[in-house]
Length: 367
Ligand SMILES: Nc1ncnc2c1ncn2[C@@H]1O[C@H](COP(=O)(O)OP(=O)(O)OP(=O)(O)O)[C@@H](O)[C@H]1O
Image 1 (cartoon, rainbow, N blue to C red):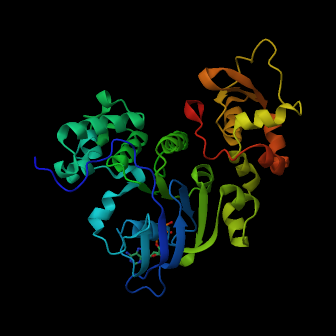
Image 2 (image 1 turned 45 degrees about the vertical axis):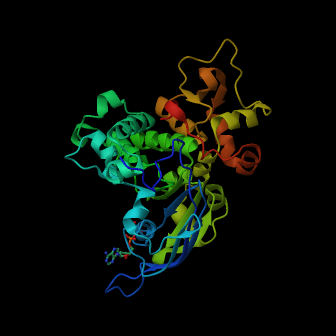
Image 3 (image 1 turned 30 degrees about the horizontal axis):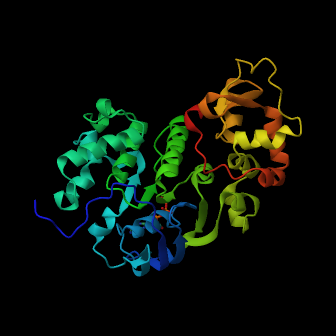
């Protein structure tokens, strides 16, 4: 094989690239108003930015213009400082992983063939020979929690919805792109699987540090996953752009208040981890002493789980407390329902004590 000028894929993981949308507009033919009207949005390298807003406001159009599945009518798209507005769209898409609802897998291809699709297209000239593709496929299946020996030869129809979604994420990561676009990635799975997939995505993101732009209809998902959330209105007008905490506690307009809904106080529970809550509340005597050890009937959660998850688990188990564990499953303490509820009435104190928990995966113990 002759040497080529293109470089082989790096052995270390590529981290995220910044994305800058500058006055990007999409006017569909025959429509009175642009679907996306001169949006200006800078997405920082390594962050998860979630786009939310009412149906038809232009979320998917905005997302698909980033990888030019939809061509902008005007404006510029700048990826890591490079204007890619007129770059070859296929080349651009190799730098941008794309995940859609239900994984978007090819039904006639095995799991391994689906995951290896982009590396195979890139081919030997980019350093992807068969052996390397096979190794990369196995590595990614492991990353998304699927045993390669069991799953690599299966077809999509032989997988659950959640497993298909995991394969979809693995496929998007295959060529190690700096950017991932996700359009309602967890919209087609049941709530429990969705929680797991969200936690897995956070764990993967902690390891890989990609730039992720995600569209969701689920505001709770936005709060849980987003480093920042952009709330859009018709024409993709940015009504508010901020951290989940900023949006929940200081909504910019009535539109945001309506959109966030009445559960804003409850949603603030997703911003604090149970470990931070325990640490913050210990001084107040609102945690129970373990004495001879925690009650074995109580559900157990890792310290990184959120207060919202703790509440869910207590309600599901019909128990008034959860046992919180740290590294190597060592018991950290017991967090009571009363303690969780106290966070609802003093979110400001909670925020001062505890860093936002939305970036922390809850691990296997999550609901
Ligand atoms: N191919 C198209 N041709 C004409 N109009 C379109 C086309 N695709 C989308 N639109 C219109 O553009 C607007 C924005 O659509 P888009 O799919 O981006 O919204 P969205 O916020 O993702 O909606 P939803 O939440 O319902 O998926 C809508 O009014 C839609 O009807």
